[in-house]
Length: 298
Length: 303
Image (cartoon, rainbow over all chains, first blue to last red):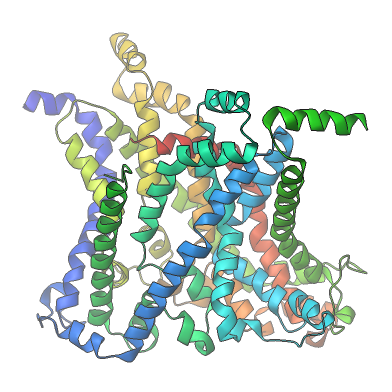
């Protein structure tokens, strides 16, 4: 045994930095979740702070702002599944119809680029287009409408989320589906053509069924992510005048911890609450997919 | 006419209708233009001289070019500071990422030693569970990193997805290669640096770029851990400029050469800043794109 350990000493040596990092920055904070059941005292640290049972949760559930952010989180996530989830699939199917190598490459290059920008940069671009004398207001006015402050408009905020999110992520999202389409056996299409199936029928009866497992996995992961409605994007885009429709659990946690007081116990309680629901949803979605004959993720 | 006929024939071969053929191309083209246009509009605004700023409307082509906004930004100490901060975080941070990712990825790709499954599970668990915002914040504060540049570097060490991609690639190198080197008397260190890493260079380059882009785009840690304005990264400098532009932080001599404060159009300055922050990503993008499709395909094979 010792001889075997010694034989692999180089491997263990290489493992040290990574394992140390993971213990310090992943596992120690995981223990910190106990704060959800404690009253945080700065002088005592996480370990020394007194246990208070479910008080943090009770206080949290008594706040209307918590329920508002929970509702927004669920609604935004579900609407994302409707308005964002199918877009990369459709884009991949359309890109797959482009036969010219150059054209396909150029299109993919353009579509994928925004994925690599931060939401702050994307906010800068949106800010420019939507500003008082920007492009969008110019179009509105020339169509006979009125100038609108779109960034502070409650009814426009959620559409803005879905539009900008698709703008930024659809090209990247399409890659996985394109890869999945590429791996389909070409003979299927050849025999379909011999049988006189139209291109549309080939898509419907060959391509879509063949990429169904990929779609199922992505959908399960999206459902298991319901409690995260996209912190970076919303945090950068929202402002107090649209909190009513935009404040999600993550932005609420952030504000409670860093801008309106520093209630670390309650913020951690929300983190735990989110994680538990996400896991429940992930398992439920996976079980549902299995019932429908899909492979699922485990 | 003959081209049209050949297209018809080509379409007939795959049973595509001409209308679908046209529709798909038109939709994809509109999509591509709508992705490109916001950048173009941003550029136009950033070079628009002050006198055009008050007239309401949009310019497909700017009537005159003026790069004064870029000059003011580049000459401003506040811009230079945050640029240097981001550069430092990107260079040191990416090196730190790669040291951890390559060493651990290689170790986990080797087989037949005690604890391998344990260490792999240790990584996989972190993909699903995390301590979240507050415990991580308290840890970083406990380590005394508040207002230190290392608060933006140390907590982001290994992105499990990239580490597993690295491991999968190392694992796909045939065992015969290191084994024959071992028979020739090469040490473990020689095998890693002379054989394994050179073979893995393309994937190492790709992952390095992905980490570097993530570092360039990072702002959240800077927001919660950094207090001093001069230590804030570029992305936060941009965000602050977009929320409320404070021209006092800009270079006053460059501004007065322009004709003073009243000569700046705020939005032009803001858009110049957006362009400057985007530019480095645009420069590395061709290299990123070359590999990411391949990278994702390797990653999608279960490691």
